[in-house]
Each structure stands twice: as C-alpha cells, then as structure tokens.
Amino acid sequence: MDLSSLLVPASVRVVGQFTSKKRLFQELGEIAQQAWQIPAAAAVDGLQERETLGPTGVGHGIALPHARLDDLNRIAGIFIRLEKPLDYDSVDRQPVDLVFGLLAPKDSGVDHLKALALVSRTMRDTALVQKLRANSDPAKIHAILIESRANKAA
Image (tube, rainbow, N blue to C red):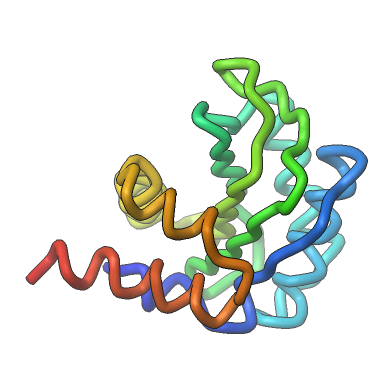
C-alpha cells in the first residue's frame, strides 16, 4: 500500500479557512463525493462519529480524521491544507492546518490500520510537512505526497 493508491489529484485541496470542525468534516465529505463517489452525508456522519471517541488531531498542526463506512470497496484519502489554522482540540492544543482524512470499508480490518499508519508516518516527516505548508497548488501538494513515500520505499 502506498499513498498513490489512497490519493487522487481531485482529493487534494487548499482551502482558506473553516469556522468549525463540523464545517471541515462537511468539506471532507464533499471532496469524498466528488473524488471518490462516496456519499457526502455518510462520510460526514462517519467522521463525526469517530471524532466522538477522541480527537484525531495528532499534534504539530496535523489532523488525521478517519472513519469506516458501509458500502465502500476501497480505502480513500482526502488531503486539505488550510491557509488559516483551525482550532481542532488536538492533543497538543495547537490549531490544525494539515488534514489527511481516510475513509475505509467497514470490514477493512488491518488494511485500514495499515493505511492510517502509512499516513501517520508520512505526516511525521518534518521536511515533507514544511513542503506541504509552503505550497498552495493542490497538484503540487499531491505530487509531494505521492513522491514522498515512493522515494522512501525505494
């Protein structure tokens, strides 16, 4: 599994700002629908339900919201870079500006955990995170993400 199987160019966006975590989840749902044909409402509900178990803000301005959904046949990723950080209730209390969402089939089991681990490792790369924050072109951000793990795997 690599990031190129989790992200398509249409699933990467740069957005000015959100007024709430709920609004961010709505945007993630809209992108999921446009890029992956996943019903937006199902995505939003799944993300909000998972968030009630504990915040998915992992620190250093990064959030990894994720959910398992019925009627999915693959794991789908969505990446958003926020121009203005959002208060996200992260573990370090810092606002979030990089969001990598994952939607997985309800029965994906270990594959969901592998995808989450891959994304988490990727987002811990400080040089990569600096590149993501320095770019506002979604196509360039997609390329940075895809190339980052491909180079490390080689």
